[in-house]
Image 1: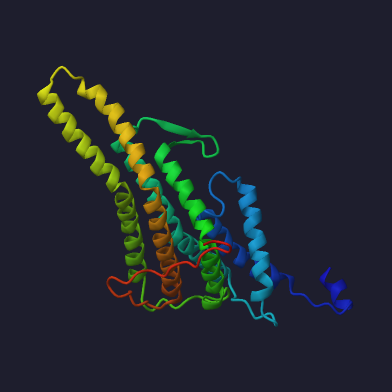
Image 2: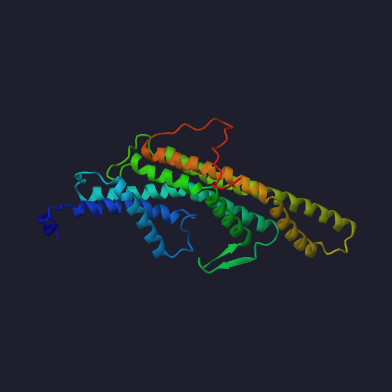
Length: 294
């Protein structure tokens, strides 16, 4: 086949095309496998693989060089390139995925506080059990992220990573892995901060209800406080969550803007640069309003 094409004046280095395209696809596939707002676990694996291949084909014409460069010789170097691409895709996807899991953890804390931790919902697509509040806040986070256009900023940062970290080159690891490890620890810790900040109103309301029930038990011991507490705390938890939905939506906008900062910071760390932390108290950038929005 290559000989026949060469006779027609078409010279294509199929080996280079295959290696270069699969390297792009490796970075895209690992990113798609981690990011929940794009193709989460409910989406079948063939769909995720096919979607990542479409994204890789979209990026290929913009990244392929005019002349086929000489690829690193040796199987070890080629395997290193594939591992590098997989690591970059996982790291970039991890920076935005952890924010969503923070909101899911907040729903789990709320269910625990209102005495509904035993009530789990079966998710057939995942083949596992999930928290009612966790699934609600997780779905709300996905819808909010797509509504405010967060996926556009994420894709911009992801595809810019190909220019900052070329496919056929290894990044500079001068600063070492410690800044990247510290970055991962900071993001993981921020997940717990998100969870407790969202669940705080429910925690306080349930605590006040427990105090009132404790006083009522002292005043009127004949009242079945144990049974009454389950019903009362269940209603209070749902009511407080409903009353704070507007605040939660605004909080999600701020956190998703911060996740864009995390993505850009991860790209710089992978590039071999140590980004300067933002000044204390500085607010993250805000997303522009969606088209047609007020």
